[in-house]
Amino acid sequence: MPAAPGGVALRGVIGGAEGKLFPLVPGANVVGRAEDSDVRLIDSGVSRNHAELSLRPDGRVVLFDLGSTNGTFVLGKRIDDEHEVGMGTLIGFGTEAVLQLVPGPVARREKAELSEREREVAVRVARGLSNEEIARELGISRRTVDRHLANAYARLGLHSRVELARYILTGK
Image (cartoon, rainbow, N blue to C red; front, side, top):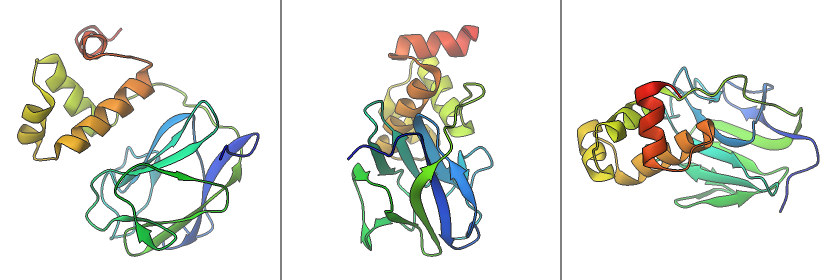
């Protein structure tokens, strides 16, 4: 189900973000406690990189849990795979934060930047490590490595490991 014309946002309903509006940008939007999260939530039940909301070119909004400790919930059910969400959907992040998908202002990323963890993964790609090796070295799951790579590709407009390695090594 495509999003409403214009922009899309998350509105805090329960928790530390209650009443706040977080406009979402096209592509990947990471929700978490980390300072570089696109949607930063300070609630204790929220993981550093908790979940991703992806605004797809076709207007769909897809939610994906990034291996969070306390889970991501839609309609009270914990999600494990990609889950399409529509306007008005209440999304739980951990045990204390609930946000709602609402129409919002059109938002754009000012500058393509990788999150700290995306950069850590990208540097290891440039070193020639496989996703399994990266997961072991960083103490995260292979699935989380895959998601960080997908986010990095989306943020930078890249399509391959070679392009990502070139970006890390040259900045271009």
